[in-house]
Amino acid sequence: MSEVPDFATIHDELRSVAAGLLAKDTIDWPLLVSAGWIGLDAPEDAGGAGATFAEVAVICEELGRAAAVTGYLGGAVLAIGALNAVHPNESRDALLKAVVSGTIRTAIALPGAGDPAPFELATTRLGWRIHGSAAFVPDAAGAQQLLLPARDADGVAVLVDVAAESPGLTVTEQPVLDETRRLATVTAEGVEVDEDAVWQFDGDPDSGLDALTDRAALAVACDSLGIAQAMLDTTVSYTGVRQQFGRPIGSFQAVKHACADMLVQISVARQLVGAAIASPDPRAVSMATAYTTEAAVEVAGKAMQLHGGIGYTWESGLHVYLKRAALNRSLYGSPAEHRARISARY
Image (tube, rainbow, N blue to C red; front, side, top):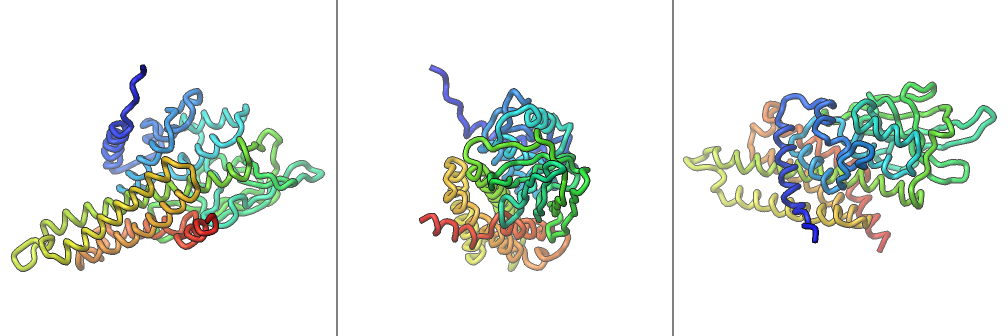
């Protein structure tokens, strides 16, 4: 009988390695490639590790804990998820191997909100052309290939592979308050498309497209969980050494209660995120995303308050976490939108 692997131990080791790597001053793309994070859940025959989203979630949480500036969300989590979701074919397989090896960077133009298939694929006398626009696309700027979720003339959802320098395709960076993320608007105005660049989803097209949006939302929830945990750890450490009236402020009952409330929120969020990772049910994803992204903003705000005046200074760095948490709360559906989605399913 084969021995069942201890995934908790594996995840703890992965978390420890990730924390050490993210402690470096510069986290560039080649470093993420050499660490094996890009192809973590890519198939082994494509050069990946053949892991699952549960392992990717560990990395996402650590990225949030470090408020790391990387292109991991768009260039790895969403791009690899999209490539895994379509039928294998020669062009798709070649791109998947190139992404895993780090020779090509790609991103999927999955909008932060709205229609998950914002592009239209039309047949004209000149051949296939794609039109449409998607806003708030993570890590599209700097990608050599873009994956555009579209609907063909029959209304079937497909994924279209387009080179970033294609005539008619425009990628415009969108400045946002959170300086740790790069978002862009991707616009296609009659971009010429080859037949072998139109890929069909594996299984029901709409379900496959919805699963990509759920993957994006859950990745953001994991990031928010890391933000909240970092804010609690920092606050507990600070209140343990900050003196007032001759004793640490962490000994005051009001501060203890505030930290306890933060811990409860994080514990609930961790349970919801864990349940969503273990279950493909969209309701579980919406529950985790709605609660965790909102909790991260509240925990970060409470951390700033408990740090006193220094918490509101630029030098403290707490503002970086608060702004990242605020952006996460609005990406791939607001808490209100996810709660409406849950109620609609019931």
